[in-house]
Image 1 (tube, rainbow, N blue to C red):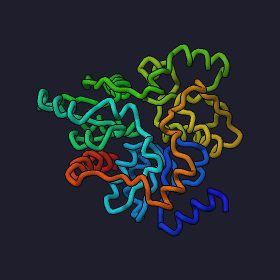
Image 2 (spheres, one colour):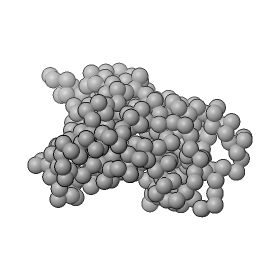
Image 3 (cartoon, rainbow, N blue to C red):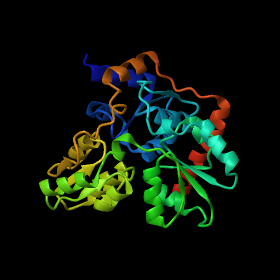
Length: 301
């Protein structure tokens, strides 16, 4: 029996659902019941109603899955898969900010820890940040955390003046305008698509700034044949799989998130076999942290 066959057998026995982010290894995406971005996976976790959910992504995603499916066993196949951006905002620092700024509304990017989510007013993803922020009255003071780049891009796009936490995605923050200029020279005519976690000047130099779900949708609907992709390279597998006949060029091959690549087929097999990597959160934290996520999902409708 191959490793994949073993996983599928265990999945059936456990009544499990496997969710995978667009950035994880290709072989993990291929065994998943559903592959998507943070917003899509958040909703699938809520809708799954499965006894076991295997969340193939990073720690904050597994936590979000547990918050939205509290009665399910949620497994993170490799507990070492973290998110550097999420670790840039601690719950204590957020509490301190709230004490000093009691009238400020806190909007947390979903790329944040559960204990931070328990301290904020509403969450958003890169796919729905524009809608969430637009729903907040114009005169309301906002602190956006932890990604300063996504927040700055929303400020510019919406004409807001949100205060920004000093966090970022190390992968997207390293993208430069010169990288885009070089890519355009190598692939003239191909549109440049970047993630809104990139710096504002990079977003301005690109043709489109979209979430991974937005990138997939844009390319599926486009008549174009060549595209330059400025986000984590795991998405290329799904792009090529779903768009035969179209060509995709990475903006930079080095755009790889080491944490997103930590989960292996062996990890998934072991998690299903042993029910290892359980995501467990304190009850009071769960009660508080689920509220801003539920608000986010409600605003989306």
